[in-house]
Length: 93
Image 1 (cartoon, rainbow, N blue to C red):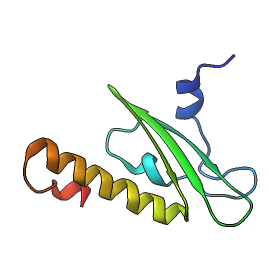
Image 2: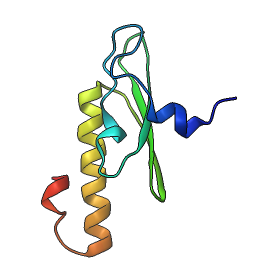
Image 3: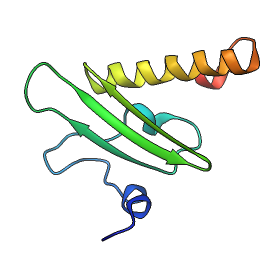
């Protein structure tokens, strides 16, 4: 069995079926590797999972890859706001 983090670090930008793999949790700062999934049947659904130093994160969205990227960015901004007690850093807005 291959090491999952090693596999995730070497993923291709485009899947065998032509789907671009660059959305959602992969766009977060500090991510070292990601995996993606999607449904070929309507309605559209996508998923992504990523890891970095000291963290893992996963997301599932009923919508497009762009919807998920927006969802993940908004969730990160909300979490950071709660942690630091102020506005989210500009890098995640």
